[in-house]
Length: 206
Length: 206
Ligand SMILES: [Zn+2]
Ligand SMILES: [Zn+2]
Image 1 (cartoon, rainbow over the protein chains, first blue to last red):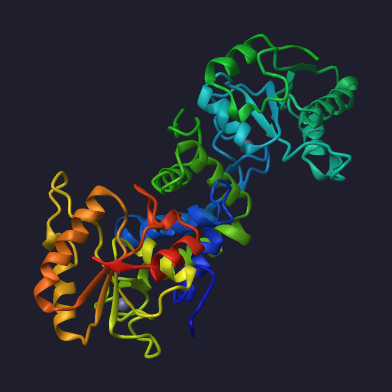
Image 2 (image 1 turned 180 degrees about the horizontal axis):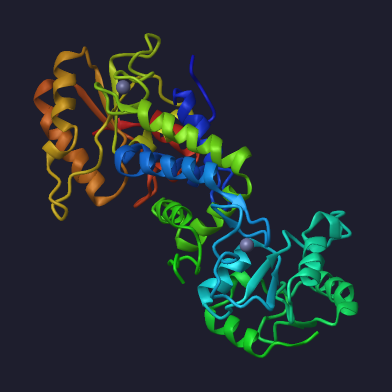
């Protein structure tokens, strides 16, 4: 087998490389990556070429928002650039996935701040590894009335919430967190819109 | 919401388009497509750009083998072009996925013929929609001793096997099929290598 490889005797190297890259996506193991690539191979013009182009375009144009850490296609994301959104409220989330979940629910009309993770002693993630200094800076310079901590109801999420609340205590800004409604151990990205909306509306002082 | 879309308020249009394309892959629904795109967005340089490039390259270079219907990167696939593979045996499969499964098992050293599906009265798939005429032509022109029908143990797979066996009856070529070992209703692509190998070795006259 001259051109032999992991995915079947004589599969061309380019196709094997593509399968290996696809298998690195969440939710796709080696087998499902292979099946996905086969579908792409059969639909080269209708699916593979447009997908490759869309991906290449986004890879070049995507950037982290300089203000909030959301991912968009300009230095300031569409949310931070939207004058119609309230500026006094900052909703703090761990991840862009959580921001997307809240936006899908359509329950918040203020601004966001994406931490990029949670504090974690185990993984040696301190405040400097997240966007926590940037948040404190925003609260100090923007006319902020309220910081809503929309962090996951996990140990690390709540540790991070407490850390931020302490760090902001001296500023006098109102610090709230999502109400009961977020199940214990639950992750925001998996909640339905109704639960998210109710939890936001019933938010309580932290 | 000026730039509002299906995946969350102000997600840029390019990113939404990418999620929609990803959601068309097997095994990825809208939610998992979103999660996959988020991982790509976070790993733009290390994963998204190389994946886009690999996909674009394969979209341009992939072609169906003129002889057997396998997908490769030249007009004649690596298997058909390999002098060391026996020419007297043609293993007939429904799909390239099945060819890959047999190659992964490493149990067959002859040539393949990919039908591109099965006969189906329900879906109005006749012999002309598959590569059955090409197979009959190959048997007539290549020095073929044996045609191994490695079709799925489904109703359509077995209908197709019978059709091909009948069509080749007059040629005198030996027509065999995979032995018991393929479970009833089972699909080749899901079998382990041992089962595939045993079924091939114990193949019987059809
Ligand atoms: Zn922003
Ligand atoms: Zn071929």
